[in-house]
Length: 415
Image 1 (cartoon, one colour):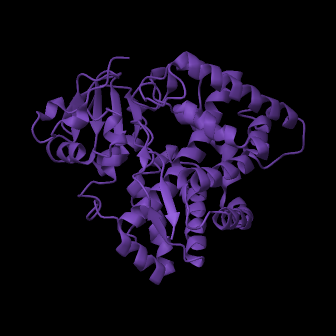
Image 2 (tube, helix red, strand yellow):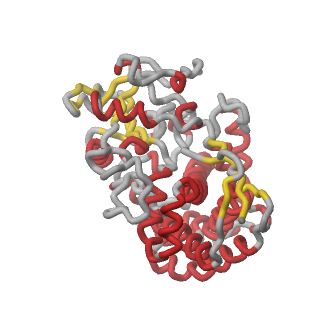
Image 3 (cartoon, helix red, strand yellow):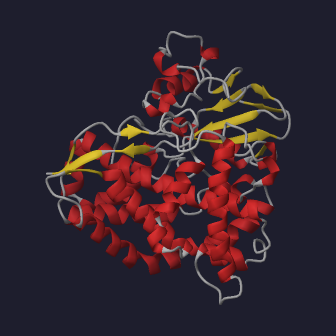
């Protein structure tokens, strides 16, 4: 891979719009991406970048345009063999699939296999357990001492939830976080866990072997309500090959780990940075119902999703050619001034707070969206019950990625 441009050091108002490249992971690590997308939305909302480390690509930056691409399965594909769902072509091509990197009808057939585990009925059954764990985690936090919120709260809560969804050995649950971090690692990052696709695949195959061992134990057992049992016994998934098992569990682990954990971290950071909003929340805990979707929009834990053009198509006055990369930038759509009023403001009482793109849309909308919302809801209910007040003790350290908008560490203190 060629060297990533130092886009974050350029003034986006001083360079030709044709030269803007929003694929640079440093833009998201430094949280400096906003003016680039603002200019694209205003001047060139369907933008062609001819030269990037990932190859040429189209940027779709406005809310309504992103929705159009999401819902147009005739012209835009998620298929792994065409490149997959990220701006960087899938290095494993047809050898590793998951249902998010499939088109219809295969996509929905496999998705339906795991969907019951996060159905409204099952969420009601899990709510008490989620609350008890949240209470335990919050009550175990040190008082008056600096600690890392990401490690002590965000990772711990989401990893326990994933272990439950998989009926995964609880003592090994931190493996799920490790596998998630390896799966999304950017090799250019100074703290990258792996430095090549080959190294990544070694770890993912170790993950696959662990999952297959659990899978085989559950093939002949009575139907379980965990995702491994459902896939091991589902007609559409029970004969899945080893590499596709890896692909699907990478999807489920990243989807269940990175998005919720970074919303938990980003939510606290946003409330600390906007103390008047925190005061309003304490005065009226019913605002949690709009706080949760506002956190999810404002954090936008998934930065982008990619489609590949299946046909030559005119879109937004531009001619997109068959085979072109088409990138839906959720972080831009969620700040689109024409779709969302004052999007730059963190507003916990926002009208139509659920109008955001952080979960995607259509058939590829996040299968665990309601579970993510429930976890965040319970976390903030329990924080308010305890009247916990937090101080930020240093800037959050963000991850180097153009796919996951994440916070690696965030030192805080309960005052």
